[in-house]
Length: 174
Image (cartoon, rainbow, N blue to C red; front, side):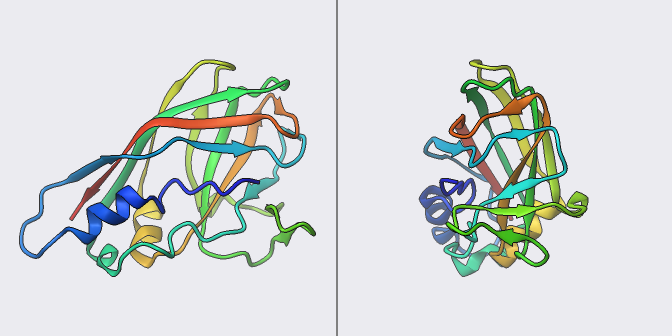
């Protein structure tokens, strides 16, 4: 799996490092397109595919001052499968999961509901707007610790199919 770093973006880091003290207005920045390549054929199942990299460890220390984070953008699925929906997860560790032998992704087959951030409907070949937010995302950014994952919940994706995340922005509130 290609590193899916929705949050550990240079733009977010730059936005956070420029903050001072006192009342800080919300900061919104765009982020570069991100491509998630499905590591294996995936149909509706309980398996969640996570990145092997903590996407948040490079954020500046000021992240502990954040009250909320919201990520918005478009998700576009391309490939030979018939993917119609996914769930996005954010996990604080790899415990209880299997790191694949080539270390390209982590597979978690247990109950991952505690790490669910958002569900996204997908229309093959068309950009679909989405918004990620919530307490789990806020805490992960504050702690600079998070492994982002995707679970197929409708249809299926084949190995090598792509999910493009683009046209997005990150809004941070202090």
